[in-house]
Length: 299
Image 1 (tube, rainbow, N blue to C red):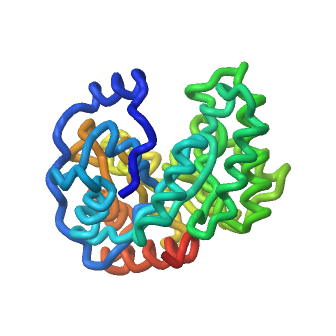
Image 2: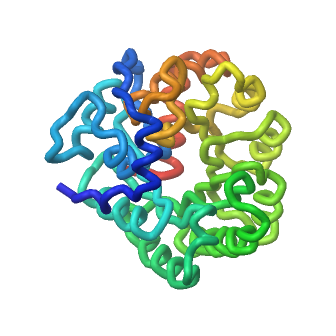
Image 3: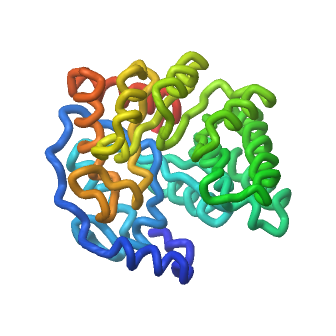
């Protein structure tokens, strides 16, 4: 069993307290297996525990098992800094159901005393076989102000170059920065595979991303009552450019919003997407699974 990266920081303890509560009950299983294209197992286990009260001696195995019971048989563990990226790469080596992506989160980049050294660490991890993506990287104008944007952009450009050098999918975090994300991708030249994680744009932005051949990954936010624009974006996304994710332990889908999230809750989001897109559930599951294998696989 792999040890978790470290004790949560005080900030994470505070966040965990706000999200305190039991995991929701398991939803009805899906008719075909799918993947969770973006999760943070390390943060989930450290802050929220193990869904279903699984064995504490191997919380990662327990989380995988609970997800598999409802038809979520593959997970992509996503890095947000050097430590979590290293942990993800090691976890992917240890568990067949897990693949990894590695990166510096855009809000992490401005805080680093030596961005270049951190990027060298990320590049060394990118070469590993079971690291299949570079992310989450991108731009975030919600949590980082003007003073940090130059570092964010430099980091994003460096991650794009790493993705192209190692022929890995680029997994993008884009918050309130749609135009700048596209501008930088145009400047640098996008990798062959681009995933917009936790897609947050409207139909117009979705149409532009689809036109460019990017993949749109929808999280539990698409189930929220207020997310009309997001559902309009999902409705026009071709099923072969659509992925689904938890971003666990965040963004728990309706009707459990506010409680801890984990990969086993993916069926709630998939069923919502089937209704939104007018796609047969079995057909949608098959398409999501095939797209996941095309982007990250084989497992």
